[in-house]
Length: 333
Image (cartoon, rainbow, N blue to C red; front, side, top):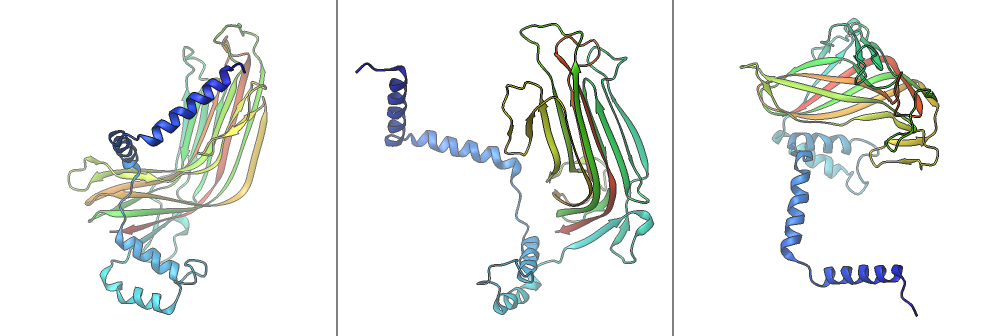
């Protein structure tokens, strides 16, 4: 029987796998494990004992928190017996300035009302932005709105409340934001009259993202110099989608949640969406930190007036509006 190329490749692959299994190189294995471990180090977080204890107490007193085997009076008694070993977290909740409830641990948003306009000049066309956006947030009411429109470049708009915390010891800060959000986007396209076919030309695409993200910056309280933090960790995607104008391509979704759709137009929206968004950051001692929870919108559409590279002129419009109800910061030292 004549051997085919396929059978030869399969035989070689099988032989290679067998050799690797039978004769592993300890040095290679150790190096691979070490490299993987070091690559993950920036994402590793130190376990805070005070927070771990607080989470156990919460789970023990939540109907669906712990497995019934562990949810017993004995478990609760043990947790009570060791309570003296741990520090209780400090809870501070920030609200819109016009609606701060009474209480020593309730504070107003720190950010002043603001509005900003963002322009992104198209490369080589400084007189034609290609993308622009607008964002506004009112700390008195918690109301915000943002718009990002692209006709040939990328624009990003971030709006939301900022709050200030100060530390004496290092803390594990958990930030929980409550908001009600409306969002929508529109994607469309039209034939490009200036298009010039070439090996480097393309059909076109639009990239849209609407999400919530944490922003953290800290300074040393004594020197007022910038200091680094570990994190922040956490983001909440409301929509992260690309429209590929090449109708012969295949749609898909990445592990991170980014979706690729095949088409040259589309739209989606959501109204009155209740959002609970939680993020975390490890803050050093003696720090004064500005913590922001922002609605992040991005629009990126290729093409533009006079562009010759893309067969279709793309248009992307992303919008978000709503109200931030509160931002709670739990600090575990």
